[in-house]
Image 1 (spheres, rainbow over the protein chains, first blue to last red):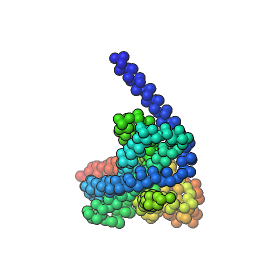
Image 2: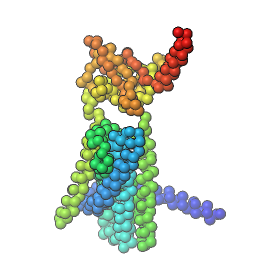
Image 3: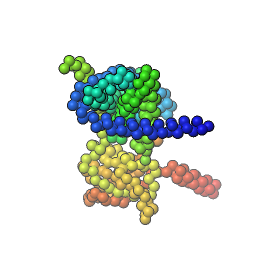
Image 4: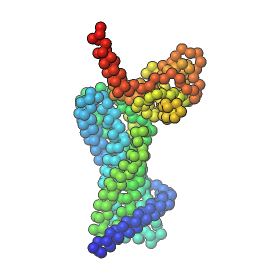
Amino acid sequence: MVGAIRRLGTLFINGVWQLGFITRFFWLILVYSGQSFTRLHLTLRELYFSGVMSLLIILVSGLFVGLVLGLQGYETLQRYGASDSLGTLVALSLVRELGPVVAGLLFASRAGSAVTAEIGLMKVTEQLKAMDMMAVSPIARVVAPRFWGGVISMPLLAALFSAMGVFGGWLIGVVAIGVDDGAFWSQMQSAVDFRYDVLNGVIKSCVFGVAVALIAVFEGYDCVPTAEGVSRAITRTVVSSALAILALDFVMTSFMFRGQ
Amino acid sequence: MSRTTMDLWVGVFVAAGIAALLFLALKVGSISGSDIQSPYTLIARFDNIGGLKARAPVKVAGVLVGRVAEIRYDNERFQAEVVFTVDGRYKFPTDTFANILTSGLLGEQYVGLDPGGEDKLLAPGDVIKKTQSAVVLEKLISQFMFNKAAEGDTAPAK
């Protein structure tokens, strides 16, 4: 009984300690960003590994999500004789929610886990310590470029995901089923507002980018320097990124889309 | 600098991302606000606004000329006060009629303006005096039922 309470207390204190550490870590990344931007090719390299390499999975998943939305949306809308609104349904659900959220989840598992593994392994092989010995800040050299690579690629990937999804919905709705092409686009355009829908979706994806990139670099930097520790850190990256994305999405949706 | 192919791919990625954003902005969505130029505000008071919401369209002859900016309740007149912005290119006579209409059977509600024949034009901030409230389905049905009942009473007497 006492043991259980003690464990609970340890868990709580550890949580608060980690929250403080992650905040300080975030601040350090921002401080060292300037120094790391002077060697821009480091950030470009990370942009390549987390952005360009995730392109294929994002595009293919976006297409499939769009195809499914087209089928399911048509099936439901045609019951009410509103199949012309298919474009609206596909575009709004992608731009507002599915684009940022699904792209964020895919990004966390594709790129976030890779970043954690890389930094974790550097810690295991004491490369980070060696950098410190040579007066090279590992945060400026290793962490900040990976962080910014993730932050920059996330909104671009989410936009590509949404665009691909709209294309998928168009393929199913207009090409395969035969919804009127003009009605599909014009209803979509009249219902989707740039500032209210598109821009809020972009803001969401930027916030997810910061959350996923921060969690990924932090878990790698903070991992226990053993083989088991690295594997646990990767698991934690995927799990806490997914939780952070979904929770942040709820919070932001409740601010952005109140349907006044 | 031997990383030219990687730089190229990063360039392609960033360009594709920006192209996707442009596609979302221009083809999927419409940039609102830019189609309403130098807006001015007008006010109309209604007995009942039904389901009218802020940002609802304001139309004249079916053409979008503005949007509803704010809806508030006037506690002195016991009426709803609808503030809307209208494109500066369009002017309306002082005897313009403001209605709350519904687009389609289940569509959104909007403010429809019917220009009158007066020579004087509405200035920014003016109040439109002639208004017609939203049609409330319950009232319509009860009126219909009442008329039917009244007909039923008089019919045998004839």
